[in-house]
Amino acid sequence: MATLSLEIITPERVMVKEEVDMVEAKGELGEFGILPGHIKFLTTLDIGEVRYIKGDKIRRIATSGGIGEVVDDRVIFLLETAEFSEEIDIERAKRAKERAESALKEIPMDTEEYRIYELALLRAISRISVASKGA
Amino acid sequence: MATLRDIKRKIGSIQSTQTITRTMKMVSASKLRRAQEELEKITSYATKLEEMTDRIIAWLPKESHPLLSEREEIKRVLVVAIASDRGLCGGFNMNVSLSVENFIARNKSQYERIGVYVFGRKIREYLQRRKLDIVREWTDVKKVDDEVVLTITDEITRLYQEGEFDRVYLAYNHFVTPVKQTLIFDEFIPIKSSSQQEGLDYLYEPNRESIINLLIPKYIKTRLYYAILDSQTAEHAARMAAMENATNNCGEMVSTLTLAYNKRRQESITREMMDIVGGAEALRGE
Image: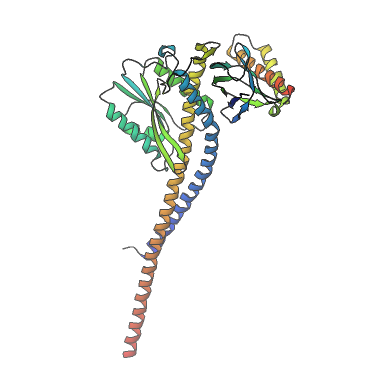
C-alpha cells in the first residue's frame, strides 16, 4: 500500500520524518485529511490538532498554526510551534486558559490585546484537548 | 640595544597576551558550540521553507504580491549587510565591509542611490569612514529575538514597498565549518524562483491570496533570522581561529625571545668570567 512521507518541522526541531498512512489537520476552512494520491495542495494550518496514522497507531500534535504542502505523496508541515500530546504540560495549559479567560473578560473587544488573548485561549484549549485524548 | 631586563619584560608581556588570546579562544569555542546548536535547530525549518517558497512562487503571477515583481527600472538599491559588533575575529567584518564597498564602487554609475542597511558596529564604522550611504544601523543588539527580526523585516519590506529602493541584496558570512566561512552576497527582494513549473498548479486553501500573505512575510523573516544566526555562528568560528593563530604566534615569539635572552645572558656571563680571569692574571703578575 502506498504511504505518505510526512515531515513536520518547527523552528525548534524536526518533529516527524517518517512514512505514514494518513494525515489529518485543521485548516482555515476546517479539518481535512490527506491520503496517498492526494492532489497538489497548499494550505494554511490553524491552531489545533495535527494527527497522523501509521498502522494502528495514532499520534497527536498540538500546534499554533503554520503552512502545509502536499506534492506527490510528500507532506511537509512547517509549524510555528508544536508539541506531541505526551509532551504537553496539561496543568500549565489549564493555567494559561484561565489566565486568558479572565483577561478576555476585562479587555474590550476589537483591540489588538483582545485578539492576542483570544489566540492564547485557542492555543490553550487545543493543547488541553490534544493532551486529554492521549497518544 | 635591548638589555637583558628589556627582553625579560617583553617575554612577560607576550606571555600575558598569550593568556588572553588563549582564554578568548576557549570562550569563543564554547560560544561557537552553543551558536551551532541554535543554528542547527532552525536550519531544517529555514531550508524547507526556502525550498517550498521557491516551488510555490514559480506558480505565482508576478503581480500577485509586491515583493515578487521585478521593477522595470532599478534606480535605487539597498544592501543589507550583516556582520558583528566586535573585532578580533580575523577577516570576518572586513569580508562583508569590502564586498559592500566593492559592490558600491562597481555599480555607482549604474544606480541613483546605493544604500546600506547595517547590522553590526564594526561594519558601520568602516562604511561611515568611507562616507557611504547608511540607511539604518543596528548595533549592540544583545539578543536577536523575534521582535528584533520582525522590526528589521518590516523596515526592509517597507523600504521596498514604498519605492524607496527597487532591489535589496543580502550580504553576510555563512558558516560552513568551524574552519571555513564563506561570504554570501545574494539578491533578496524581489524574491525570484529558480524552479520550473512542474505538473499541475496547487489547490490553494482557503485561497491563493491568504497563502501568499502568510508565506512571503514568513519567508523574509526566516531568511533574515537565519542569516543573522548564521553570521553569528561564523563570527565565533572566525574569532576562535584568529585567537588560535594569535596564541600560536605568541608562543613562537616567546621561544625566539627566550633564545635571544639566553644567548645574551650567556654572553654576559662569559664576559664577566673573562674579566675575573683577566683580573686574576693581572694580580698574579705583580
